Amino acid sequence: WRTQRRPELLELFKTHVYGRDPGRPKDMTFFTLEQRHGVLNGLANRRQVEVRFAGRRDGPRMTILIYTPAKAKGPVPTFLGLNFRGNHTVTDDPAIRLPHSWVRGRAKGEVVNKRATEKGRGVAKSRWNVTNILKRGYGLATIYYGDIDPDFDDGWKNGVHALYPKPKPDEWGSIATWAWGLSRALDYFETDKDIDHKRVAVMGHSRLGKTSLWAGASDPRFALVISNNSGCGGAALSRRAFGETVKRINTSFPHWFNDNFLRYNDNENACPVDQHMLVALVAPRPVYIASAVGDRWADPHGEFLSGKYANSVYKLYGRIGLPAAKHPPVDTPSMGTIGYHVRSGSHDVKEYDWVQYLKFADKHLKKEK
Image (cartoon, rainbow, N blue to C red; front, side, top):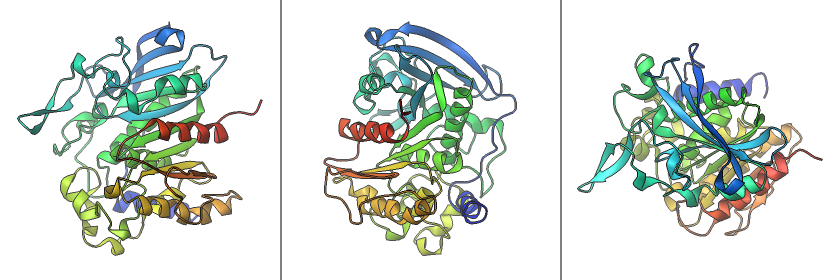
């Protein structure tokens, strides 16, 4: 597994699904935009850091918003996740900078790209559970995914792709590009004395759940991986062709995967990999897969099966993977080194999900006293 099969599977996923990326840019720099102690009613310290991919402020760049517990005595384990509409949406904090890049909006019923405004501040706070994360002793870092690569089929002219040639058929689509950005954040964490870069949990929802799985599979520096309602191209088995299928996702979002993945439209059985293998690539590190009973489009049972079928690799490391032999009842988590739950409700991130993620992180990331 370590010397032959795992490297082989990683290359197959790069070639046929997500695409290979160019690695860390040689000219990349980090610039602290702002830092302040005792924010959020004294609960947190805040830092906003700009990652300049070409070393220039006038080039492609992303902004990381970081909260760490104000009372922490040393570097803390940290949750890292991309957000959909800007860092300023994750909480009401008025000091969070608006994104410099496009955000998605609507005009006359059509999806358009526009600049973020103050109206969006805090609108996604229900998905981030910032206060509870900090009270449990964890940091939280988030990045607006549009800083890395705009989420539309733009011919690879914007975001970080402006620095590189147009991708070849086996090179990075947007999911691999967003995952690449998460790895660049981890590059920064290795320089930050307030973050324990060896205890970073990467978390994502929906398309960003697909991204967190690929980030965790392709970058072993991530200590824990969380997939929330990631569905097709994430945790759900492609061969089930249930809910969103490979053809449907490639048709609706042709920029997400590499061009080779188009071969498997209505042809899932021909693909040399499936998503339980993606989960297995995270081993022996812990991975949590979450579904919602009302989110049939993401195929909850297919997500469960990916965790179940990854068990054999965790056994190679002497770990208990997913304890549940059968799909657990609704709102009944199962946690080994692989965790899974299907909660009540629909496609979203709820407080219930974060309760499980924090419990899972306590189990695997907290140091024994």
